[in-house]
Image (cartoon, rainbow, N blue to C red):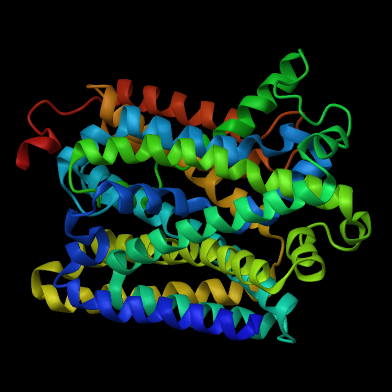
Length: 466
């Protein structure tokens, strides 16, 4: 019964993809849904961007081990990112009216920075999509007898199919359905857990001492690491194409800003539910917790709840992961075709060929991610690695480019390259603080020094061509 429900659900998703392919006429429709999304579609798409495997599996098991301090990065950092993006980054970028984040770098700094930023941005998504595929395979293996490698293949095929056909339109419409399912499913399970435990208080009282401590211990290293944890998604995901493409699909600037705030608020409130459910599950069924921490929630639902709850919960889980995977596929595909292939072959190709290049890239990214997924299977690590790479290389040039009039092309290039080198070198040493904190500082210093030594050429401001 549960398996049938999941299959029906997957088929519905694929059907939506097939239907929404009618709305796709050109690459703007494919990547940004023709900039026509109303508030409810836009906000739910943003919320669903990261509400995937790590929020439900990763964060809940981190929380049980380390308390709130363990989950600063996600959900809190994720919500911070949405709010900051809406407050400081969205308006200037929305007005540029371009397809990808790579185009934004091109408008501010010119072609060389566009190329470097794009090349640095694409590989980030391989690990990210791989993590989602592993999570979906874990669910399939929990519910059926499928092996993990087979599960990874099936997950990849389903998501590639609807993203391939409908692009951003398919993603947004499925996201709205998926968000509804996530919210209903998680609230329902949370209420059930509270009823079984005899109320909310017994669950909260069972939490280990210190697990609700929100601020770190009062010494500088703890504070640096605390802020470092907030930064990973909070700042690191600002220069990422998946959040860019979802915000820029909104039908107006005002809708775009409202949807970031709405999604941010939603993300924290709904994001705390898996933590509560996990705490309740550990309180009610400690034996499951000891078997496999990451699978605590799905195992509890399978063993101790009725069929309709199982269908709802697994529906919510699979949809959370599918929505995250689909945007993780579309983002690098858009950058590859728009910022890496188009500048070199652009003049010779017609628009309709670009659509097919975009679609071909989706398949290519999925293949690489599938190979990675077979090779490394811890979800939380795969994802955190992705945002950190963006944080240390691309965050500073984007911020400087939007807010510092003097920021020059050479400054941006130095910032991207030195930030990344600093991070990779520091990773080799055992430091008391997170390596991305000093690497971010190196990136900022390189930006300033590069701009002062090689200032913007007065006769050639890249913005004047447009």
